[in-house]
Image (cartoon, rainbow over all chains, first blue to last red; front, top):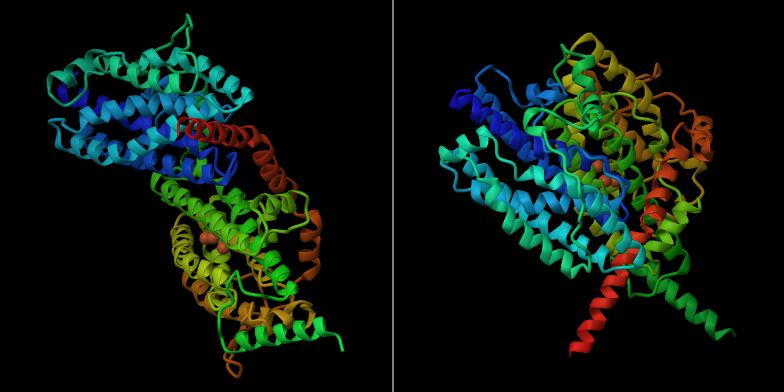
Amino acid sequence: MTNQEMLFEYLLRLGDNSLILGQRLAEWCGHAPILEEDLALTNIGLDLIGQSRMLLSYAGEVEGKGRDEDRLAFHRDTQAWRNLLLLEQPNGDFAKTMARQFFFDVFQYLQYEALSSSKDERVAGIAAKSLKEITYHRRHSSDWVIRLGDGTEESHEKMQTALNELWGFVPEMFDMDAVDEAMVADGIGVDVASLRPAWDAQVNAVLAEATLKRPDVSWSVRGSRDGKHSEHLGYILAEMQFLQHAYPDAKW
Amino acid sequence: MDVAKTDFNDLEEAFQAKIDAEKRIEPKEWMPDKYRQTLIRQMSQHAHSEVVGMLPEGNWLTRAPTLKRKAILMAKIQDEGGHGLYLYSATETLGISRDEMFDQLHTGKAKYSTIFNYPTLTWADIGAIGWLVDGAAIVNQIALCRCSYGPYARAMIRICKEESFHQRQGYEIMMTMAQGTKEQREMAQDALNRWWWPTLMMFGPNDTNSANSAQSMKWKIKRQSNDELRQKFIDATVPQAEYLKLRIPDDKLVWNEERGHYDFGDIDWNEFKNVVSGNGLCNRERLKARVDAHDGGKWVRDAALAYAAKKAARKAEAA
Ligand SMILES: [Fe+2]
Ligand SMILES: [Fe+2]
Ligand SMILES: [Fe+2]
């Protein structure tokens, strides 16, 4: 891979993370447990879609084959997607949505904090702008993990189950492959493996306050950096890409 | 002589005098019980409509054709939820809680706008809703900005600004489709065909059949009649449809030079009654979605309350 191809790949990973999670949050629209959360979830989803647009537009420019944000979002099949497996997992109940969000928010905050001093000015700019949003996302999901964990017996149990169910998707976030290494060497990307201790510290602190146990599960899955996904992604794409595929000549 | 009755008459007279003098009524002031009940009914119905209205548009959020359209639609739906929240708060000033209002919605005692019982079948419906439904809402709500009840009037002033954004964005979707491929033009025309008449019904029954109108006008809850508002909407919208080169599905629609308004065909009120009384395609789904969200979310709200109580107790203990 050339440096340009690696940067393209790297930007896809970032952009796809935001888009797939934003798409999942859109599914909540009108169905949240309280009206304030309908607003919060659309607000967060909107931030994520915004991030993905900036990142995918830039990815398209770097690639130089004339693909814009929509070409990339609506005309790639599952194996060309680079979002973390965690983010394509179904919403489940509100506890599961919050667990997924919390794991990612803490990760994304650390990742974007580092990216905001990237040597690539465009990446640094996007990261710095997004960091303000992510600060709010992280507070929002942390607060809910604490409320549900230290709320009622029922909510405690649901929150603990949600953490346990998603814990095996956590290690993948901190994987490093050749693309990550090259981006770190160029001063563009982040050494995500090095973020794990900080992530653990933040997550442990919230879990302690929430009276929740740090999950102890024996499994973990990975593969999104190579386009290996769960079955869920195909359905997300089938829904999201429907109009563009049904009417390929149309402009919207 | 009945002293209590005289006092009451004095109060009511003073109240009406205040309204006649174009003064706003504020929550803590005396008001006739019927004024209060009328407002609770109208404002809660409006709030419910904002919230139920999130569903037909949310139906296309995951399928929006471009990322930009997805973001715009998401922001619009978020606005509508915000309008709901704002209107619930305004209604609470009349002495009813949000939970009581939800209960009325979920048991069918309170209504929401019938327009949201129609399905959104194609992407053009998202354009048509923004253009027509938000367009009609604006006409209604501009009139309500001068409503005699202060909190309602102020809510409307704030909301109207966002609604005009929504209308422009909806019209822009229609424009893109009307100028698009053959299939897109057909979708746009089909959406107009399906949404036109239900939108006209949003203004309510004809003035001659509107039972509550006279009193509402006297109290200046309403400032213009249903038919006046409907005419205003039609006059503003027909040229917009012409510009799109789309045909409004009404053979009787014609400019009347003498009146300075468009004449239009008869509204099929049987269709309206039919949908209001439960025979729309989506009545059951819409209500079920709200009930499920509320009932299914009870454990979350309970947890938030329990946590807040624990936190307060710990704080008291520490103090
Ligand atoms: Fe609204
Ligand atoms: Fe409205
Ligand atoms: Fe609106």
